[in-house]
Amino acid sequence: MYGEDVKQQVLFIYEQYYLDVYHFLLYYTGNQNDTEDLTQEVFVRVIRALERYESRANIKTWLFAIAKHIAIDHHRKKRWKSLFSIDVLKKHMSSDGLPEKAVESWEEEQELIRAIQKLPQHYRMVVILRGIQGYSVRETASIMDYSESQVKVTLHRALKKLEKELAGRIGGELYDGLAKR
Image (cartoon, rainbow, N blue to C red):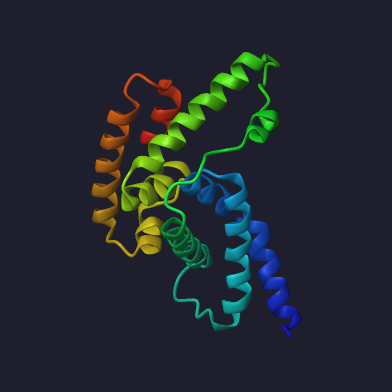
């Protein structure tokens, strides 16, 4: 069905970008089960489209454009979905072994995710790509089909809106890390 070259390319892409795609979709959806399904869908589409990939865009940019469209389609189908299940709490371990700190960190992360999900779709997308995933302005512009200046302005406006939403409710460390990117 697929040649050995295509299989090797897909395996390379998967190994290089799986976690990036997964985290992008996790922040976008806020739901671990949906994220797993959507991440799988991204790579299924990559397999189907790889032979038609024309190398006009960076492979990472192309991959995230696919992920973006899958996330938007999912959002349209399921407007608001519950956030992480309690199983995620069990997976979070505090580095110093104190469960209180792990719970506090998890709660702050949940607060940030809820606030991000309240943002308009284009703000949410740029915050996730630039602020959380750490993509460059150029990469984000390519993925979103924006100009670089649109990305900068949209991120600035999104962070202002996010700052209002989170005012006094979340530790500065999480928000500051996001705003510095």
